[in-house]
Image 1 (cartoon, rainbow, N blue to C red):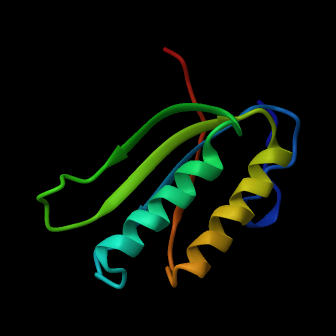
Image 2: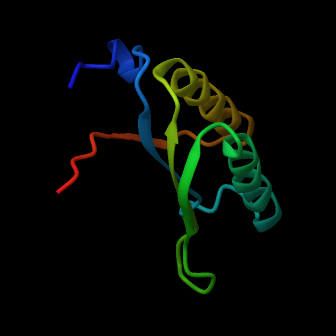
Length: 108
């Protein structure tokens, strides 16, 4: 498998790229309404940009708020653009960290 990532984890090749994107609000920086808006913004930007395999959210009565999406982008160029967009949305909501985990899938 060719290495499809350049410096800073930005995808470069024309192969599909599977990513897990995780956001959280465990520090309670966002009130509930802003948290919901933040999560919705991420969700709506991901829709239609690749194959969405799943999305998960924390237990509604749990102590921590978080959400995660697994998506395969058609190629590294789209993944790179989406990485920047997700980071931009996070900044708009005052979030300092979003996990962007690139998966190297192995079928067994």
